[in-house]
Image 1: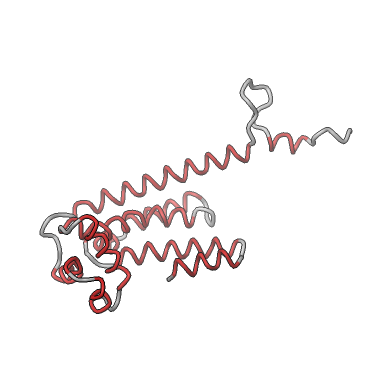
Image 2: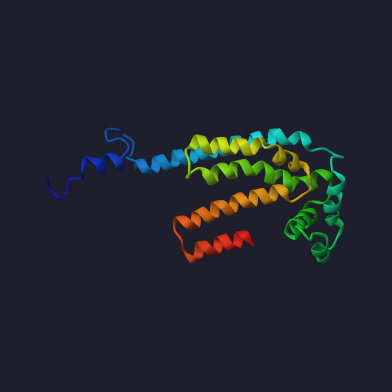
Length: 194
């Protein structure tokens, strides 16, 4: 065998089809693209299911008494946030910034927790996708989409759903860091935690 000839294994792994008129495309690239398309499709479906399950809870006059205190941040100054949000000053700061950008209404007050709750199932699926089979990761996403507490708190002006989403993101970043530890990746995880 000559030095210039490729092994059959290398040829079959690198090129999709030999006798096609189309340009040869690496199989690994095609598989990655198909995997990304599948992952995107599953994430979109999980988010749509989560939105469909949660949207009925959003309505005018649907804020609970406890939500009114958190929503009051719309009238407070940024300096007052540290006194108001002893348990979740970051959430109140983001909520205050949101109100400054779009104004206040009950629906707008519910928006950030709702979005965090709706994105959590897709984030959970994507975080687990490379650890378990696709079907199991999708099942975990469905469970996250239908979990009653996550559905209930999607319409409350509380930090709970944002904390769940943040936990999933930190889990994914930690796994990413552990896959190839480096100071740069560690700082990305530390930054996400802070």
